[in-house]
Image (cartoon, rainbow, N blue to C red):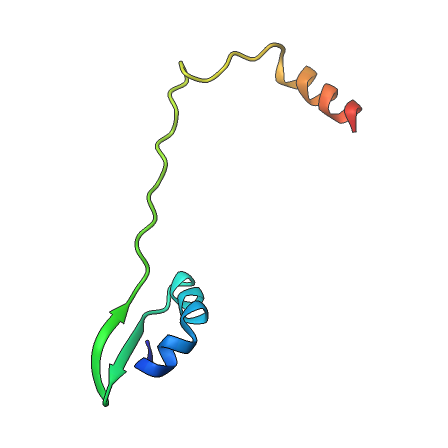
Length: 72
């Protein structure tokens, strides 16, 4: 856990937020006393689409792979 002063946090907020995004917690102090803790918000997981909602394949997968390979 990283501890920084309020004045440091003001001038380096962007860099501190990068560290928070990487999973590190940051404590901000004023006059030597902790006043805030910044931590990452848990990311929302996207639900998987139902197989019924997925578009139908127009050909067998091997044929689709050959088409993609030949286009490159």
